[in-house]
Amino acid sequence: MGLESRRIGRASHYALVVVDMSVGFTTPEKSPLGAKCDSVIAANQRLLGIFREQGWPVFFTTVAYSSPDQARVFREKLPPLNVLKVGSGLEEIDPQLAPEEGEPVIVKHWPSGFFKTDLDQRLRAANIDGLVVTGLTTSGCVRATALDALQCEYRTIVPVEAVGDRDQAAHEANLKDLELKYVDVLPLEEAIATLF
Image (cartoon, rainbow, N blue to C red; front, side, top):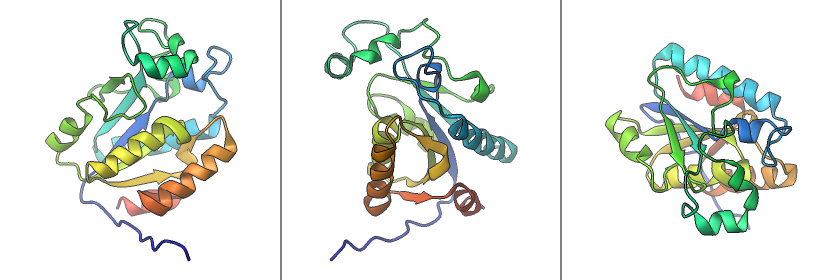
């Protein structure tokens, strides 16, 4: 017998958190971490358009390292992360999704956008109680950020088309697990409808 799981339901005030849609993750010809993700970029462009039109908060995250002692064990486990050096260009948000003025880019060293950053404080200062979490990768930084969003008591939506992974099986398994236990995983159009 399976677990009972319910829809979390609508929040009062949403922010969009775009996770690691940086050149290092969106451009496979430039980075070992990259994956072809044109459809994920397009879904994020759609969401950015809606949030900007409504004047709702938008936050980006990126992984970037400026010294060898940052996230040492994580980088030891996953050596390709070492390409994400400050100033390399790989840590910059993909130009197709370029942040506009007033849209912070939160630099992180670990998978979650919340861990050892000020994201939670920024969201609370903006009176946010719900998040739409998008980006790359579903099984890594998206999952970690969505899980921490729940642990910080945000009603969270992950739109299926707006997240991606180099590993399709991991993508599907993590979406299934996130939906069962932590957040509302919804098709893009349904996610957008939930915002209004």
